[in-house]
Amino acid sequence: MLIRAIILSAALLIGIGTIVPIATEYAEAGQRKQKKYKKRKWNVKKYSKRWWQLYRAQERRKKQFAARKRELRLRQLRLAKARKPLQNDAAKPAQIVKTNSTEEKAQAVLPTGEAAPKGWKRGQNSTSEIQFKVDDGRGAQVGSAAISVVGPAMNAEGSAPKHKTIGGVPTSSLRRTVIDQMVRENGWVVNDYQKEIGGNKVYVVVAQSQNGSAVQSRMFYFTEADGRIYSVSTNSQTEAAERLAEESEKVINSLQRRGQSVQQAVLK
Image (tube, rainbow, N blue to C red; front, side):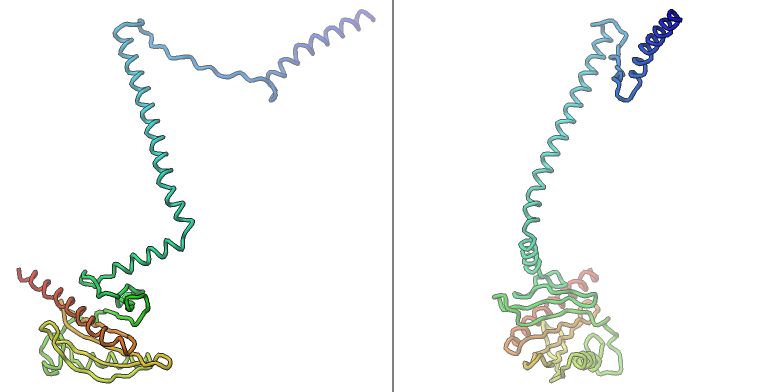
């Protein structure tokens, strides 16, 4: 019995000594063998003609890879350099808005592409008209102006006398549009008349509206250019009315010159 017990104990120890290393080898905490990649062999005689061809091709690939790596690094440095001003500007959003707003106002132009009169700054436009804010040159707003297309010019033949039409449209119809607008804006029409600006007929409607305790001067100019009836309207303080009237006539001149240019281009 004693001998048998000794034999079994020895066998058990041998078995444990064999199993433990194997289990450890495949356990999660065990050391893993890393797969080794053998260096590719060309299977050609060293320093032969073919060997030198393969060697030079290998060196060219290395140089190309290094060049691409340098180019990528250079591009990253340039992008990082370009981002710095943007990051600095992002810290001052108010200044950016002010600068952009100033540039936008300085670039106010008329529909003809000509520069707007001095002091006219682009306002909030809509789909039906182009709006401007007018200041006194020192930043104080004295009025506003708007340019819109009333509609297409009509055939001169009609029931209304020719001297009472603009582009074939009766002046009574144009006056009615002003009256309707004044009714909506708590204003009233004072006078209307025709005059020549740049050798063309222009229909003018003079109106006024209430702005608190002050009375605002309203002027509406209608002219035909490029086959359409344009309206140039102004809204200003009474003391600035004369100035806006002169500048509105300059805008009318600009619109008429554009129409003449288009007609000349068609004739050619």
